[in-house]
Image (cartoon, rainbow, N blue to C red; front, side):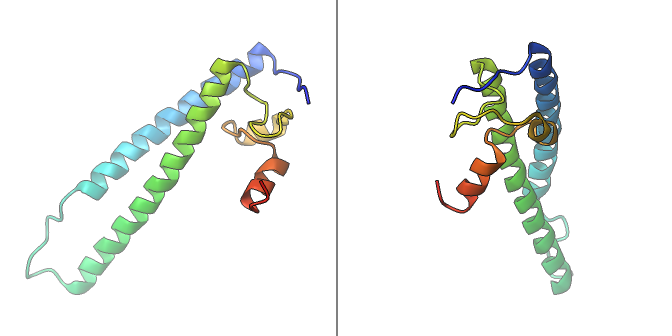
Length: 124
């Protein structure tokens, strides 16, 4: 299916949004990574087990957030690649046009909602 391309103005607007998101996530990842890697200052015999448990929980949450942000960063980078390739706004799988409303909500979307749902259900 041939899909109609977005206007250059729209693509530039999405590109700017994607670059801003990428910068924010990169900064957040750097902060989270530094926090996770930071050694425990209070490690020793005086530290209570409950405090250690809280620290471990906080570190696990930070790792999960970091993992999610890395995944989001990969999606943003793929969308920026699609802009360079001239295929931004076109579903990677079906070749259909991704509706502007979806791109407005998720400028890093590289699939239509229908295709994404099929992927998540394991049908593709």
